[in-house]
View 1 (tube, rainbow, N blue to C red):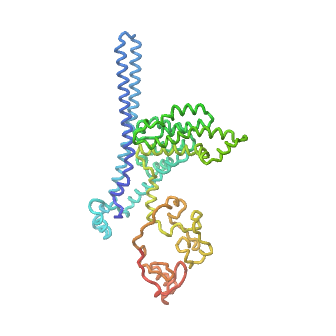
View 2 (view 1 turned 120 degrees about the vertical axis):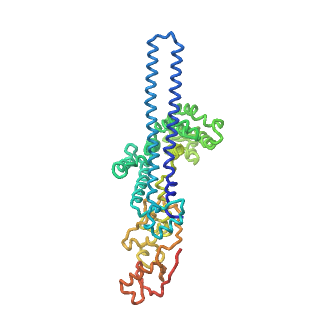
View 3 (view 1 turned 60 degrees about the vertical axis):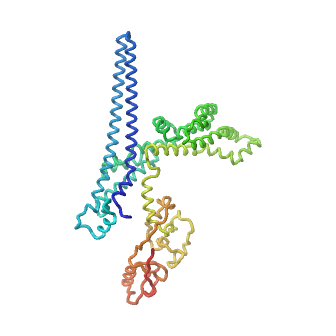
Amino acid sequence: MTEPTLNFQIKARQTQFRIPTELRKKNFKHVQKLIEKQKRQTMEDIKKLEKNSLMPTSMKLEMVRKCIKSFEQYQVKLKQAIKKDEEYCDRLNARVDNLVEVSNYTLDGLSHGAESNDDSLKLEAVGTEDQILDFRNPSLISWFRNEADLLIADYLIKTAKNPKENIGLAFLNRLKSTTFPQIDKLIDFDLFEQLNKVYVSIVRDHDLTLVVNWFNDNRTLLKKINSNLEFEINYCKFLSLVESKQLHEAVKFSEVNLSPYGIKANYQISDLQNYENNLAKLKENGGLLLFLAVEQNSNSKLKYSHLCLNENQRFQEYRKVFSKERWESLSRCFVDNFTTMYGIPKNYPLFIYLSAGLASLKTKSCYRNHANSIFNQNVVSDQAVTDRTYYLARGPNNYYKLLEKVNECPVCSPELYQLSNNLPYAQLITSVFNEPYVLPNNNIYPFEKLSKLAAAESLLHTGQIRDPLTLEQFYVEQCFRVYPA
């Protein structure tokens, strides 16, 4: 069943409810810890007052004032947590309302008198358990435009190169103030902004401050998912110390913060893969120091043994360790933990929808527009393309330049080439033409189009038709009705 249905739209957007739900759970656990901490602190203060009955009144009053101040701070934090929970509830309610709105744009909502025969057949095919969306309803088209804006905002916020001026947030604020006022309730922009800030600080700035703070705030949750983030952070710190020639500090840091990761007993059974990967990196530490010693003497006259080391392929791999690869490894680990903890899709939702659409459009004629520099395989010479009857250049894209037309195929566009390159071809099982006829040159056209063109050129009375692409003329008897699949 290929009709656009209501149930499909609901299932496709189930992930929108996962993130606010996880945020509510995290906020609730924070409130629990806050209450337990305040309760424990208050009980300790009361016991101190009871045990020290001979304490001067001034000191007792001071302790009571501290207890009251602590309670006031506790109330402020509790109110902030309650406000956050209300905000997350508002997001969930807004997303429910957004999906409920679509139920008003179905064919079931039409009066029976207004239904066409095609609509009736579609409804019978779907059954009573689902509803078909009415794409003739302008309100539904507007709803899908808003959904497209959501996907674009999601992508721009996550991929912004400058977190201080996030282009995705600017786009979101513009939509909120103009055509889409409830957009901030339908996207978890604050969480995506945090993801982007930490990621950019690692990859671009090589700064560990934000990722360390995030790790400390979520240490308990990360432990439950067998996170390897702490090792990656410490490993980057160690390499930074070695790179800055602070060798004594690097050795001490390694003994305290990295050595425990080489002990198998410190890992859970489900976390043995991290143990093997970490152990392999730790075994390289001694070689790193030797590599650095050779690199420092690279400008002086090297001994023969040093020259052999420099030419050794295994020794050259240490150069990669001090490259950007360590920061990319840390960023991948962080993104993986972040998305797992909050239930965020690992792929951009925009790319998922684009891939589905591109796969339905991709044909064997795609990627044959050789005027574009990215299609550099099996290039057809310009001399061959100038001949309209050149059979090896079959495919409409090869004629665009000759016909002075623009190739508007999204699959062939440079912007979407990387995304569509590995997608499967569409399985077209029905003809898109009305009465397709094949000409002697193997081109296929609808007969109605050929007859109109022949009538306009006064060829029809002679029993001839013209190929609109190659401009060749053929007799009608030479053409045959075909049924392409």
